[in-house]
Image 1 (spheres, rainbow, N blue to C red):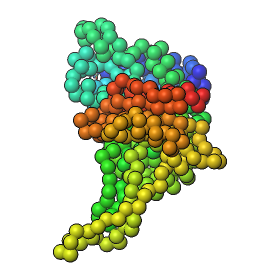
Image 2 (cartoon, rainbow, N blue to C red; image 1 turned 90 degrees about the horizontal axis):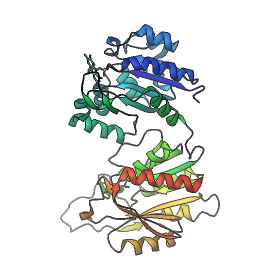
Image 3 (cartoon, rainbow, N blue to C red; image 1 turned 90 degrees about the vertical axis):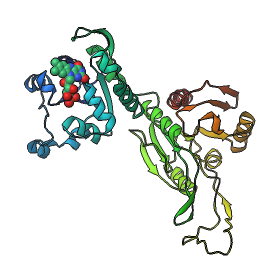
Image 4 (cartoon, helix red, strand yellow; image 1 turned 180 degrees about the vertical axis):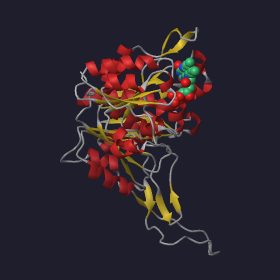
Length: 397
Ligand SMILES: Cc1cc2nc3c(=O)[nH]c(=O)nc-3n(C[C@H](O)[C@H](O)[C@H](O)COP(=O)(O)O)c2cc1C
């Protein structure tokens, strides 16, 4: 099942570290090669010699070991893996990951990687339930980190509750899932996201309140299903998800060029809040308050990216999905938009300020297709993304 797969196993300094030795054996039995990285604390629980003997590999321990840097530095270590597994993931390691610290070999490798990361948390129940760990869990989930466990049960510290590391066979199964070919393997999906900025003069621009949260979540969810994702983003608040090809643009015209360059694609999801208008003529120098009255801004219409892609005669993607952010008559307007733009689906949402959707973490969408309107309950943008990605996989499958 894991033949030829290269796994970098980071062992944290937790009481469950001894199980990581068994994990090395089970992963190797299934054909994977395992390169262990031990934190300094991990060495208090398991010896590098045991990990090395079981992995039949050198064990990496020190960021500043110059011999290792010459042979295989921290960047090369993260590059050479198909998947990074952190087991046990201590509260400390999770906090470092969530904060983006890179102050030892394990955390630096985790910061330097663009590979998928699977963590198996393991800690005392109160550490697991601590507000700091809860916050870190949420950050890691948002960053697209995969998690297996923990389970509930008796703990080494004599307490009972959630926090026990998942059993080794469950971690192996999660590794297999993470490395499996998802239903979108071999499919190319272009996702546009975020606002566009349309310059007025060298210092001012027209923008909108889009945070890019929904587009980012969709790109991440599609990548998680194995799609090759080109993520074309305006200046958004969010970092792009891991495992996608990122193209950064500022204006609607640049976004259209980027989409055309990214094609062909099996699907295009236009989640960006593209400005409808730009300046008819951008001022080359800063417009001055010169006492001669107010400036008059003349607008020109921006290209319609969704309609352009949906209307392609040659090489039209199988599925073109648009978004309709509306403040009035949401369903009627979105239904009309789907017909006018000739796209396959429209994801409609009500962006009146009182809904808290624009810039918020929840979304309340209606999916409009040729078959009618399907109202989804209010849920997080990540959940909307997961459901939409699954629907796209079904349709392209
Ligand atoms: C006996 C003992 C057991 C420990 N078990 C755990 C544990 O299961 N989970 C955890 O998060 N921390 C545990 N700790 C605390 C960690 O070892 C400590 O936070 C350490 O800094 C973690 O370092 P690391 O994350 O770099 O490996 C334990 C400490 C001791 C002394």
